[in-house]
Length: 129
Image (cartoon, rainbow, N blue to C red; front, side):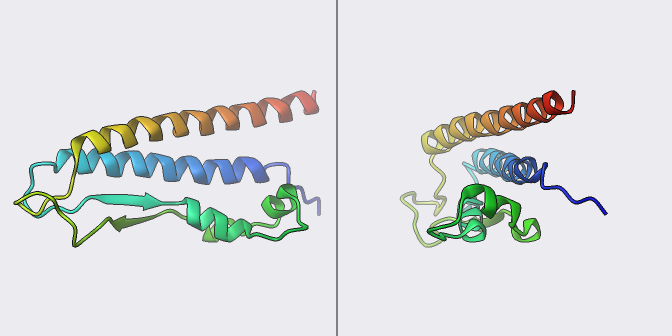
């Protein structure tokens, strides 16, 4: 049986893009609930999961880390941010300005991830020709 790691980077980028999409949806939900009394903002954590999965091995290359990564553990998780903190009387902790900045930042990240996947597919296509 023939085994290849040709799609390893694409698979990791795909997981990161899924997490970015989930974060965009979560931030949009926060903005939709800006006037809901008692609502606590939610956020998505993917970076720490990726960092943990790739590890901090000093003498291992990034290629080796990506090729050996177990993608089944590489899932984003949603969490409630600063549950006991609120600067508003109605106990809602969503700040519109912060959420809009985070949404714009996440949009740039998502576009970069999808562009990176496109470039990886282009490289694979050029090698196969």
